Image (cartoon, rainbow, N blue to C red; front, side):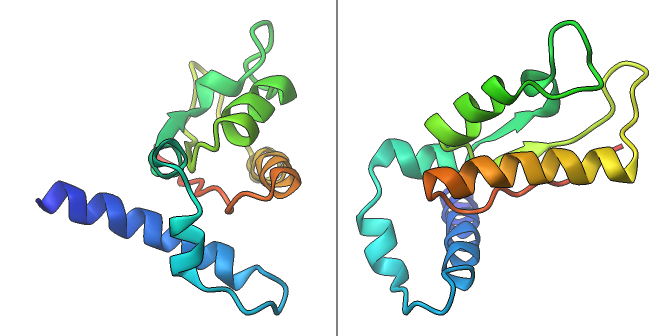
Length: 119
């Protein structure tokens, strides 16, 4: 039961972020939740590791096709950014990664993606 509570709390936070970025429109979160399929709700609560969106031949760059697939088409709700191999991301690289992901979700009309860092 505790797991389900935490899962739905995460979805609620994502939806609140979506409502707060609706550019002044009145948004009813219940309408958003009821308008989502089970798969959309599940994917919004899922998190992937940064390695899944990096270029195969250059781990310091993201692959925009992979970003589009995971965050646009699938609607994944969180990206865990951790060092991959010997690659540590600078503040500028971190910002660029987050902006690229947010641009894709904006294009698809999806909630903002959570992008926590871990060391």
